[in-house]
Length: 60
Length: 222
Image 1 (cartoon, chains in turn yellow, blue):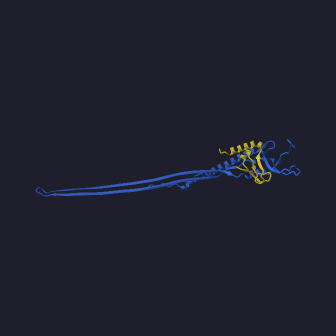
Image 2 (tube, each protein chain N blue to C red; image 1 turned 30 degrees about the vertical axis):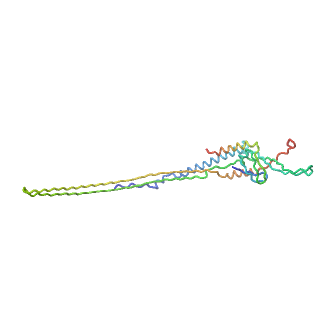
Image 3 (cartoon, rainbow over the protein chains, first blue to last red; image 1 turned 90 degrees about the vertical axis):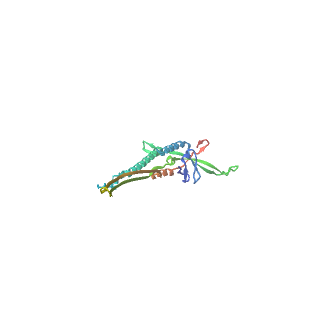
C-alpha cells in the first residue's frame, strides 16, 4: 500500500511504498525530481512498526 | 360430526418471536467489533507512533530520519584556468518525519450487516366421510310335475336370498409444522481513515522542514 508524503522542497506529493523504503529504495518527487530515502538509522524502527501494524491487521 | 380443530393462528405464531433480539443482537455485535477495532488502532497509534512522557503527560510523535537528495548546478568559475565545464553536484539534506505519516494506516471495520429471517408455518386440516351401502336380493323358483300311472305328483322348489352390506368410514387429517431459518452475514472492509487522524497526519506532513547538513571543511564539520 502506497502512502504519500509532501516534498519538503516543492510541496508536491511523493508516493512512497514503506516496504521498499525499509529496503533502502529512493523515491523521486514528480514535481522537482528530488529523491527521498529512509536514513539507515531509522530503518529498524520503521521495520518494527510495520511488523506491529501487520500483526494488528492479521485476522484472529 | 366432531367439531373441527381450529387452524393455527398465524398472528399468534409470529407474535412470540423476539424480533428485537434477532435484529438487534447482530447489529450490537457489529458495533462492538467496530469499537474494538477502533480501540486497537488508537492503542497502536499511541504506542507505536508516539512516545509518552509520564511527567508532562504528553505524547510526542516518534520521528524518523529521511534523506533528501537533489542536484545543484555548480556555477563555472570564470577565473579557472583551464576553464571547467559546469557540473551538477548532488546535495544531501536530512529531514525528520513523524513515523505516523509513513505507516499505511487504515481502518478495518464492519461496513455491512445483512440479517435474514425466514419462517414458515404450515397448518392444514382435512376430513373425509364416506358411507357405502349395498343391497342384493335374489330369488329362485322351480316347479316340476309328473303325470303317469301312479298318483299325481308335483314338486315345487324355491329359494330366496337377501344380502345387505353397509360400510361407513370417517378420516380426519390434521397437520401443523413450522420451520425457521436465520442468517446473519457480516462484511468487513477498509474504511477511509477518520478525519481526525487525517488532519493530524496532514499537519505533520505540512510541517516538514528540511534541515541542512553542516558544511564540511576538510574532514570535519565547519
